[in-house]
Length: 212
Image (cartoon, rainbow, N blue to C red; front, side, top):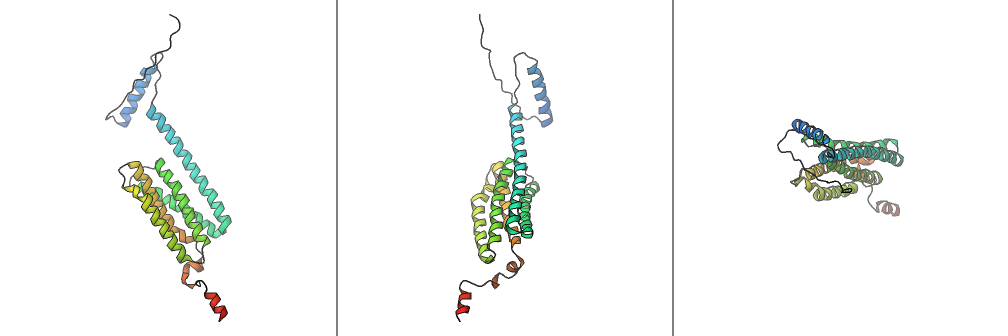
């Protein structure tokens, strides 16, 4: 009786206690059986989500690598070749240390790990630039960076106490990465200021000497 709209129906299929290999075989069998029926379209939402997350993960890896290269060029232009390379090494080592720590504790490197690396990169660049620009007062820089580190750890490092695995992963990578950047950042100090921070005259000392 005329043209009728096609009947649409969605039949969810859920697997319980099926191994990875066996589950893949069952999925392929269901896909083949569904495609053999006219008008049936097989959709695997889990596989589609995993492909999308994998694409996003790959994109973030490339973006992080490109960001490190751009920041390295900026640091070399700002601080010179030698100190710029040191500052770039601080950023790269802090990121690699954070990633290596996840492997050590047996956690996978997922999207949350990469999102945490973005924060580590931002905090790390602040540390190296602050140390590089305020060479005259390294002790003051150290106190300022210590306060910044503690505030970051207390506000974001507490995520490691969460019961959700993804949140724990984010907090762990962030904590290790920021702590690594804090420990390595003083490498950008020049040798003179790094060796004898107390030799820097205090405020007003030169004025008093010149008056006397």
